[in-house]
Image (cartoon, helix red, strand yellow):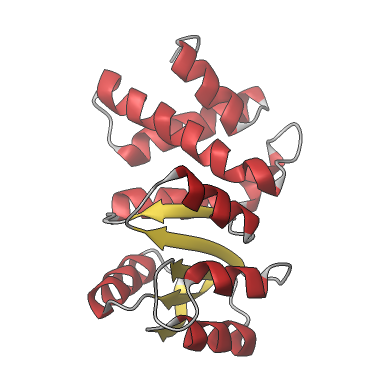
Length: 188
């Protein structure tokens, strides 16, 4: 079954790019909105698995929409051109799983979404990740991916797969593997 997604961004080109990226990976885009008020209505009516929301939109912003659907079956990922610490904390407090910094490419967004939505990845974790540290975990994994990309010349998907496979083989969390990579204690 395909993951059902609502996309909300006030820039139509961003929505079109996201839709193309997602549909190429067999996600099902069930709705699009150019403002937060319409996004909230779509999420409430369609109950998608995932909502990709721009933080800054007319009407309700992405943080307000995330807060309004917090606790529902819809997972929220916020899109932003900014990565300041206060936005990260606001995203976490609003119930967002993560945030993605624009601009992005399919080679970046698809592995990130897969890691957020893949139930098999969650099964290999030795302890559950609480909502408060999911964003921090994403940052640690991102830093480890970047280190692998620099050191080994890998693309992002290959670096992510290495971290994921190492975690599964060791029956550990991706966060723990990423921290070991950053410390230089993980061997290929």
